[in-house]
Length: 171
Image (cartoon, rainbow, N blue to C red; front, side, top):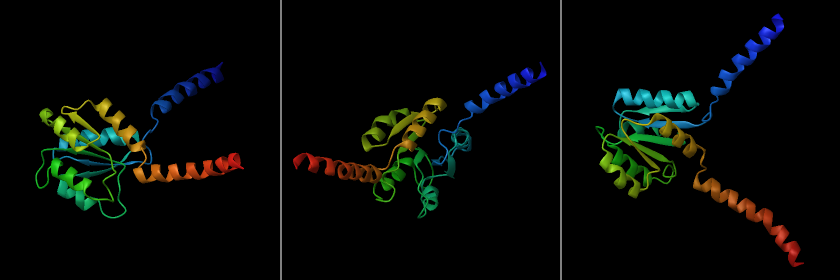
């Protein structure tokens, strides 16, 4: 009977491992917030899901960390920050062809700014205090989204794959 108990124990220990799946493994998030408490909360949430996290204190600091070759899959950015606020950071990000495709989620205590940011083209707006579960769900979904150039390349490959079939029909 002892082996059965060990088997039961091993099956019990397997279930927590399933809960610890890392849906964001292999993805990187840039988190920009001047409030250490918010930064640590968001960072911890993302790391637990499997994200690698680059942290920045404000928009200026974030630009320093976006050196060539460092392209996060998602940016989570506060609005009210010193040096460069989230509004200016987002506008500059959109003007840079190398990084403008990166999805951006805005987190802010200023709920009245949601419409303005959504009109500018951010991918989501989360009022503080944030709903951690919803933020994480959206971050994972956006991180898995392919950049426009990858979607375009896939579209071309599908056209090429379909082209011989169309030619065969014509013959």
